[in-house]
Length: 276
Image (cartoon, rainbow, N blue to C red):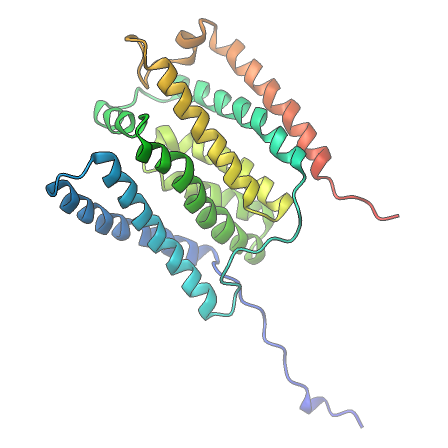
């Protein structure tokens, strides 16, 4: 006879992180950042270039955070490395370029309308990091997209999708992504773009398109700043209406249409194929 007492209960699969663990990981970011800043001060005393110091601080802080998350995932039996379940169509990479141009332009314009001007100290710090220096470019368009997408989409969003729901995973990971920027002027844009990248991640099951979007967004922002900063009348507080010489509402509508057209194409491209 079949003996039910001999049945062994299959242990429930554990995924990292859940929501509480996500916040613990974020809280770990701040002491790690202080440690990296302390190393940066030592390098400054040794007369290292400020752009090299920023790059080293960033890689150390985000690198330690990434290794910590991987170590925890490995310890509980979750996959320690980012995995990819499907190949991503090349058309996705084509369509996300106008999508991110439209979305970032839309959010930046709204930000200037609802937020106060960037404080002088923060503006100076951001402008110092947005230069044509090799290490400045390396930080903005290589290190930031890779580390931040592994942490925010590949680890946090992935864990929350499995532990809560896809929608909650996308929203919470975008909020944490915004919080890590430590200021509302970058945070608002980070949240909106983070939601978009979370949606792309959910649809493709790969962080590669997210890294590409992040790279494109940062590269375009850096190129735009370097182009416009040649004018004596331009700084980070210059509004889009002054740059384009047009009304904010028109700028919002144009960018919204660019994003929506690209988004509709992405929905069609990423729609699951029906098996006949």
